[in-house]
Image (cartoon, rainbow, N blue to C red; front, side):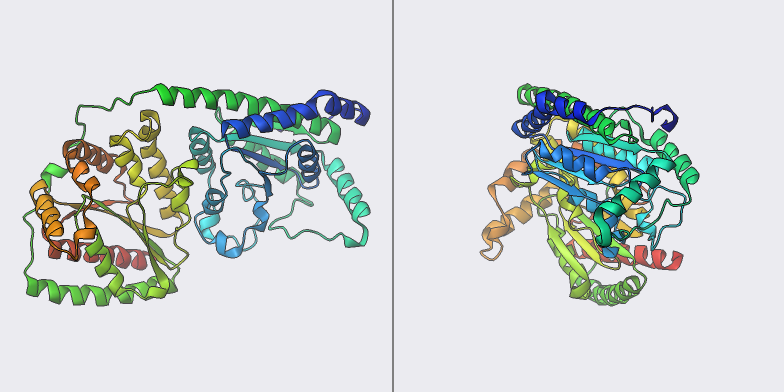
Length: 494
């Protein structure tokens, strides 16, 4: 792809100034205002050769835009601690709010090279397919994503470097980088070209820019920004209008039948429960220490019917653990701020650090259950969530995280019994709400949704464990034993 870039293109600085002053500068500001008015978030990625003057180009663009709601980042400043987490964690946390523009001068492409990377952790390694999947999640989630690669010759690169040293004088010093291109132009050319070909997709195409003449680069980039934002705003407003007018029509035919095969008669005696509870909790505490020492993290996701016993199971797990190295994250319906972002955004903030354990009480699966049944999310959005969730969980697992998902299954009669018990017990009355009864009225719809969820997102790397929970004692022990088995297997493999 790089061989198609015309490095001989020239443009007089005076001509560019005239174009900016007469129209293009105004169009940049206008496009930004259109995105802001529409509530559409914009992400710009600026990749390219070192000393290709990308910072200068971004700075010039900002002169014609409102700096409020405009932020610039670089992935070369990601901390060592951040690099130990799943690769895209930092980028998920930095998604722009609606109407804002976030720019990356160096982005998630910063490690895609053949040169040895300093202090590279296993979790920072990423494939082109993973990058494409991440970008598709963004664009499917209605983020405007614009990608630019600024290409310069080796001669121009050296010339630009000397100019920067001369301009900054004694203050200049090489910026800390995790790899260098110097002396490796041909090798990087090959690698960059491979990267561009592999990640030039329909939803997130590359704009290849000649950087030999910075005026040409600015003109081409500014035009592409105006065109790209305006096109995305039009598509975004069309989507929002269609969403306002649409009526969700979910499948009525059952495709999966998993829950009906669960044996809910499983039980243990109180004496056996007490004995094994003590045994399992002691073993889990030992495994927590071993996993911490080896940097193995764990995600425990809990879903289930209302009154299914999630809280009791989580409590017995938490009792066994050193509180310094685990955390419980309860989730309810997204609040007003959280609804402004991609639905996965709020969960990435609680991905565990190396060696830590994170328990999620309700999860990202609300997208394909509550949001689906209550028609909070358009069909087209929740339907694609299955693949997005599988992709995300695989990334976590690839980053040395044990991912276990528990569905606590009870029958309708047991739920009714527990609801009434809560209503009649002043100490448990707070646990029951009108919403619980409303959800119960849609039992059949939720059952279909859960069956499909289990069928489509049960994987080797992030399995669903269906917990027979009519017996709370049995359910708690099964959860603990499952975690123990998974950690022992992981530690043995490690």
